[in-house]
Structure formats: structure tokens, C-alpha cells
Picture: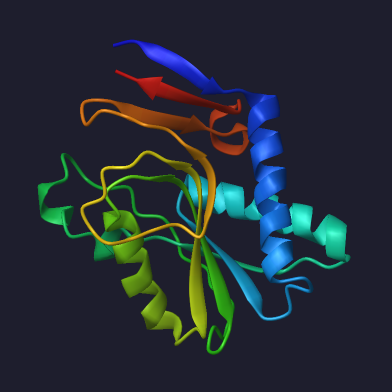
Length: 176
């Protein structure tokens, strides 16, 4: 296996900052906005976005985390046991705008599972998708509203996103 560095700490910080500005362009006061991070690294990224938005608007937007493992369409074929994390959502998501945050968009199946899981918490007015990396190869008709970087990949490659909160460093690598 070989790993090629795609983004380092400074590039990730710049991409995250740019994405935060795009959120503010669409939602200047973040009034009925809820940032929902898909466990695990999407949740870490959602916390970063909440902090950046708070520094710009003077208050922290609502935030939630979502574990989608029970909603996956491949849970019976996962090697070993899936890591089940906690979901933590604001009490009411009805009529809110959810910005669903994930690290990598690939086939679209994780996002499909997340959309299904969200409905267990209520009926948001709208759901927007934010991803740090879009690597293509969609199997479902899912498109992100906010994309940090588009990284063309082969099906035999994968993208590793490492975040300081979880991995002790910020980097994005293409592994083949």
C-alpha cells in the first residue's frame, strides 16, 4: 500500500474555513440551522464548523451527532462487529435546516442511511450536505451542497481523513 498526501493541516484549516463561509452565505444568522455530524469524523468536523461559525456570528449554532450503523444497508456483511457510537440530537429538529456533515462522500450509501436516521428525530424543513472530500463513484443519486475538495479516485483506492481530535493529526491521504 502506498499513501499520497492530499491535504495537510494548513490546507484542511483553509478548506474548513472556506466551507464555513459558504454556510454563512446561505444562512447568515444560522437561526434555525443545526449542524449534524455523522459519527465519527463528520461529528468532529461539525464541532469545528460550530466553533468557526460562533466566532463569526457571536453564538454557537445548534449541533448534533448521528450514528448511522443501524441504518446501513450492508450491516449484515460488515466484517467483525460495527463500532456503534452515540447519537445526540437537539430536542426538536422539526422545521430546522440540517447541515449534515461527513468527511468523505463516496457511494452515497452513508448519506442515505443518515437521511433515514434523521427522520427518527422529526421532519426538518431542509437537509443540506457538507463533505470535506468528494471522491466520486456514486451508487445513489446524492450530491453535496458544500464540497471542500473533489478528489478523483479509482475504485481500488480509498481516502483516509485524519483529524486531530481523533487521530492526533490533520491530514488527508489517498491510499492505493
